[in-house]
Image (tube, rainbow, N blue to C red; front, side):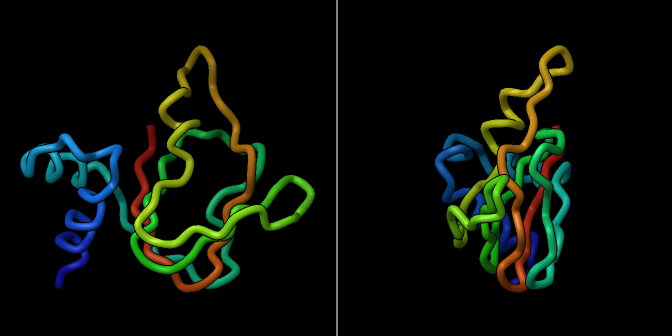
Length: 113
């Protein structure tokens, strides 16, 4: 199965995207970028601008607090960073409240706000 088709199928399972038609989902995916991250690779840093929505398609991500403690591990299919990216505006930018690190080889779809 091609990654675009797999991404579309999996992303459509997320509540955030339940109402999208196939045409809207296709348009959404055209503005997203698929990234592959190796184990232990940082996806985003604590305190960085929160203008990116991450959708974990495959693999695992660790959510690491400011003190370096792993506070959660996410598994597919899930979103990370959606609150900051949806709440952010140019007048009121949001910052990441955690560092996200790829626990294993991971495929992540990203959307920059």
